[in-house]
Image (cartoon, rainbow, N blue to C red; front, side, top):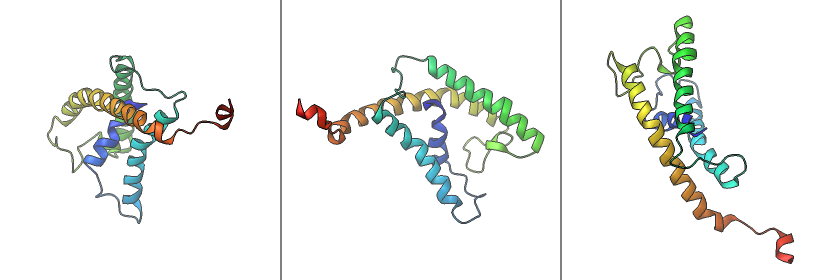
Length: 148
């Protein structure tokens, strides 16, 4: 779902590496977040079940933001309060968080409600145009169609 992908943009823009101590953890951090950004392009290329919705369709956008908020404030916050572990920086801001105030959660919800649709729709539009521009280069006509 494209509406959970902006987290990878933010993770790459504001990396939290001070807790990555073991060998390879920093590499895995970057590899996973880059993969989250690259895999949807591949899925757009092969088409199939994964087709981004039209730019004027906001049904999935509202659903994505609702699920994002529900997951963060029901699941992660409950788990963080129970375990006293700052899961996904839900209890207190990260060291790289630009909104390090007492109201960081309110600011985070506001900017997520704005940036999730903007980043997702922009990624969808740019990704679709990129995939459509490279499709003629890599698409090979099947042998049975050449014979006809």
